[in-house]
Image (tube, rainbow, N blue to C red; front, side):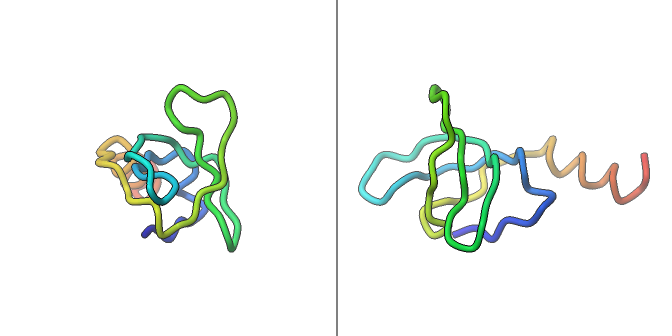
Length: 72
C-alpha cells in the first residue's frame, strides 16, 4: 500500500488490480479513493486502489527530492 503526496506525481509503482500479475507504471494523479497509474504499454491511466500498489525502486526520484530540498 502506498500513500502518495503531491511530490509523488511521476513516481514509479508496481502492482495492479487484485488478482492480476504485478505490473510497472507511473503515477499520473490521485484522489482520496484511487491512484491513477499509467501502466507500461498503455495509452491511458487506470484508477487503481492504493492497497494494490507499492513503490518501485526509484533512485532518480529520491535524488530529485534531495535536489529540491537543497535548492539545487
